[in-house]
Length: 170
Image 1 (cartoon, rainbow, N blue to C red):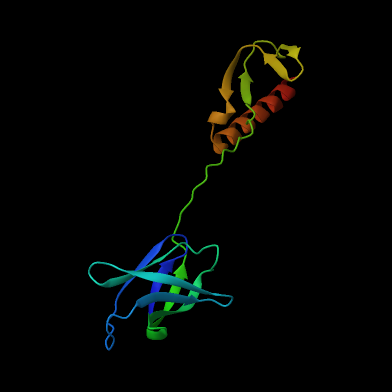
Image 2 (image 1 turned 60 degrees about the vertical axis):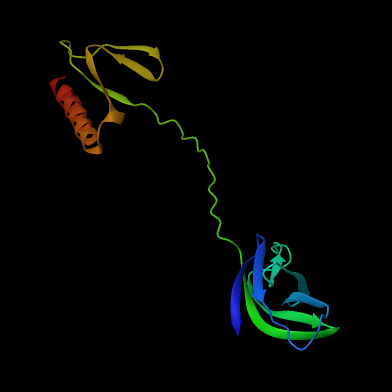
């Protein structure tokens, strides 16, 4: 048994060469019958100028699901039905790739700065103008976000050592 593929989401055209012998000027009708579990679908064929019979199958995605369906070609000659060809139709959806853009808003990363204070006094002078932003005189500002994790660890160690050294001097 032969098989062919049809796309459920677009129009398909099938063409056949059919020869009918033993009748004179009979009225011929051609139909392609696709059998599903619930219903059979019949499509009428049209003869072109070369004698080829073509069947246009409309999109069937609302009527059929993907799968294999028994199909037969019927020729009606003087009210008699002949089935010269039976085959399987493999119904598939055409491959479609869809991309959707989504925008995610990143939470603002906090900006952290650290400084090493160098002062001639024993205790550094701290001015409090805002509750969370202490001001230290004579400092070099380093933006932590530009440092590697290793550099941040070394800086934290250095600050801890400076505090211990200051506490020991006092």
